[in-house]
Image 1 (cartoon, one colour):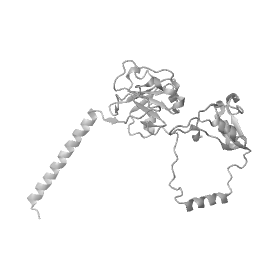
Image 2 (cartoon, helix red, strand yellow):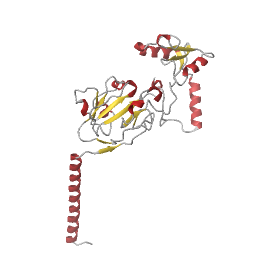
Image 3 (spheres, helix red, strand yellow):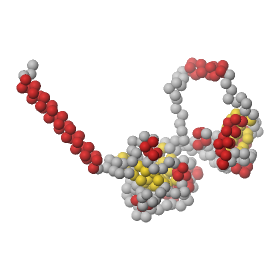
Image 4 (cartoon, one colour):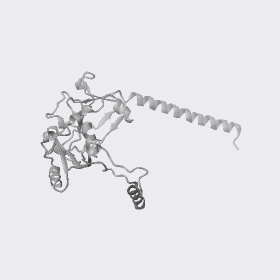
Amino acid sequence: MLSRRSRVQCLCFLLFIVLLMLVYISLRCQQVNQTSVVLQLPLSVSPRSIACNSSNLYLSVLNGTKNILVLKNSWVDRYATGRYPFVNAGCRVSNCRLTTDTSLVNESNFDAYLVHVPTHKTRWELKNRMAHQVFILFSLEPPSHVKNLTLYENYFNWTMSYLSRSNFPVKYGEIVPLESAPKTETQVAAIRQKVRQSGVDSSRGKSRMIAWLVSNCQAESNRQEYAKILSKWIQVDIFSRNGRCGGTDLCSRSNNTQCQDYIERTYKFYLSFENSICQDYVTEKVNN
């Protein structure tokens, strides 16, 4: 047993250790508040393996708001702007602001520039580009649809695309099993039997067989030839603007919702083809 004096000495020693730890934590917090925390991101390969500008692989993420300029006339304009997208998505770093408005910050003083390459015919140059300014290639199109990538050698720092190896992968979607998904062949067979016995028929009341909406009549995937051969054996109704890809112009973009409702009520199947066969690329129509 320790004497009373020894116990007091031990307690004092423990309190001293705790005090030292509190002082250390306080100093560390002050240091974090006074300096930037650096987020390192790996440099990925762009869609056509063009040379990337590796001068900036580091981005300060805590010192003040980071302003990201989306170049005008870009498809990216459809996305929400401001800080809302980052906060709403629960991003670990949310002090970023996405904007197309150069009146908020002088055009030459943005921290990052998002360039949607498919909609830019020429290379946009920033005079006196500084080392900390990040240029981001954004594209959800396959490489065959981006004809001018050779203009951007040693131009971009990061990539943002459907490619899984991009710095910022943007997926059209993904298929993942639910917790309730069957785990064994026996469970799968039971579900199939239950569906057969339910009498549910998703094609009931639908008078037409297959619908296909198409705008690109000469896709590199050769999907148009597939549809042509398929139509010899089964009914395929093609909807295209002004009938240029065959069929009719029943579904224009101006009444897209009505068109989708009509197809849902009328057709048993819908063709959804990629326009190009590329790694990681799928058509956005899988979301429809």
